[in-house]
Image (cartoon, rainbow, N blue to C red; front, side, top):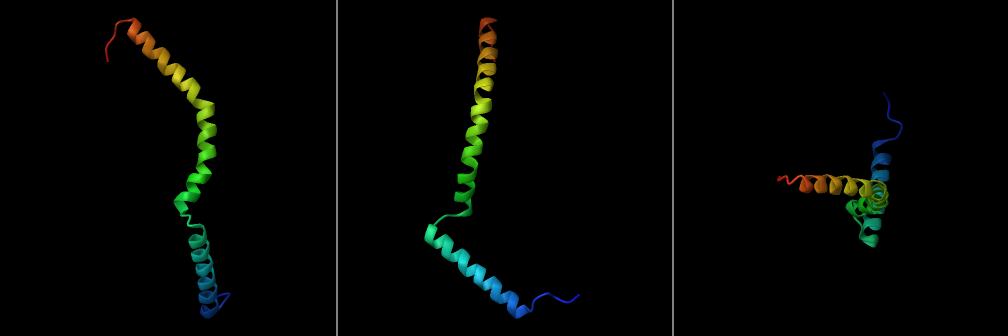
Length: 73
């Protein structure tokens, strides 16, 4: 199968995108980890807002029942 672009063109494109990536990372000093954290924070907040109150209520209720029965862990 014949390649759609030449090796020389492919290398030039790869170098151009590499230079862009280096420039963006050095100017913003942001890593992939930073970007992932930024994206996950609102998702985690939504999940916690939706699930944490019910989880805490269920666990506290279970602990109160355990203590009321005089149980130990």
